[in-house]
Image 1 (tube, rainbow, N blue to C red):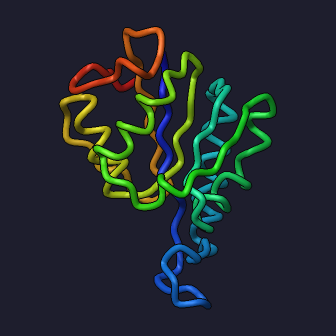
Image 2 (cartoon, rainbow, N blue to C red):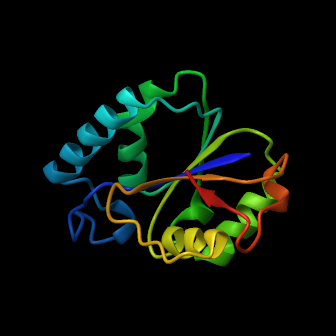
Length: 150
């Protein structure tokens, strides 16, 4: 099983509404996504399932790369917004997904989960991407130090 992590791209520090949930990508965020698109074009990945936080910045991040995954099924989840590593692990485990999945979310939860799953210190910067491989048939079995960074 393969799981891809993507932290949203660079955002404004405040939103027009004053709510963190509504923060939007900065021009630098769109530049980061352009760089990511170039990397993925050179080394394509296959994703069949996308789990994305429902926050504005993660939705915008997905919109910029969605065409790279034309066959992927996307779902947006409020519970992924600023989720902790524990919450993300519970979410992924509950899906029992045998599919190659992409998780688009936020720090510190994404980095903490990657650290937990690999046993290595991982910090995803904005628009940071990570691919992990697991020796399991589905996401219900992922646990501490069972993932290998590819």
